[in-house]
Image (cartoon, rainbow over the protein chains, first blue to last red):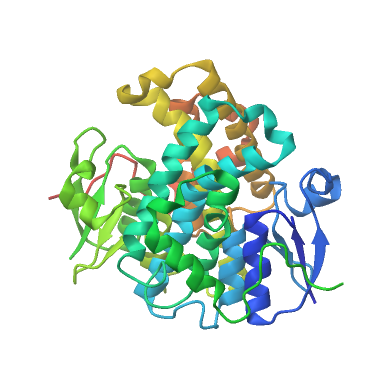
Length: 206
Length: 206
């Protein structure tokens, strides 16, 4: 069986749990909640020198890090990853946008506002630029979702999973003004209607 | 012919120019240097609402943004992109690492130190955390390159191009202490010996 090292409260980890549930892939879940110290341990650093989750361990012990790399690996051959080269490129484009711009603003602000360990960062000099840049990132998504039902085109793909993870809590946990983004709000609802959808707090039975 | 909108001084744009030269793909180069205003124009924002280069226009007018998505699109079917699912996942892993952690620290510090438009950011509160985090990112690469000749394994791939772009100028433009990273330095030399290698300032003849 596959083993997933994941942080129950993290959007990046949620991406992988959601995909595995949607594809019906069973896995052993190893809890690495923020503050537990698991990812700082020597044993974990040997598996991932970058010290981050999610981390996927294959049955033969080989490892894959980076949430979006794991999504692409697990979705290969499924309807959630297009075969057409251009459609595939659009999926990649939105997944890199997510890791380069969206996560560094929208997820970072949510982390500061919600993890007690980051309470010292709750100052306007940190929070205000993240709000402004996060709204710009959401504006880029809104422009796309005004044209297509899903972020990379007309079908639901792993790019939707990648962007749903931190967007669906942007208002509630990050105080982003989601009223400005009606197309995003409709898309969020559309994602929750996908077969096999589970909420962020879902974990496999042990 | 393909059209590449690129910023001559930018590492993200360089990635694509380097790959296209190595694969022998001719292209029309549209200069979008920082400060020229091209990427702020309405015409450009219509092509890419995120306002960033590189941007690839296909012969039929369709567009692909995000440097690493363009690399994956252009390298498909070439020796620079593995077919094996696990090897491909490792290439993706390092490309997401690059956009999520490496670029936001190592490239960001270089931009602040080198573009006059960012001179106001040359303060210790900005520069010092970028130095510290950038050294950590380089440490993650160093640990891998102590084990394999190339970043995603034993062969040269687009993941090497993605990470070479901002690593090879980390010392000269970002004042990172590259003496700490002998395996990275050997790898940098190894990349420059690849067939078709060109320097950052190479542009196609017009």
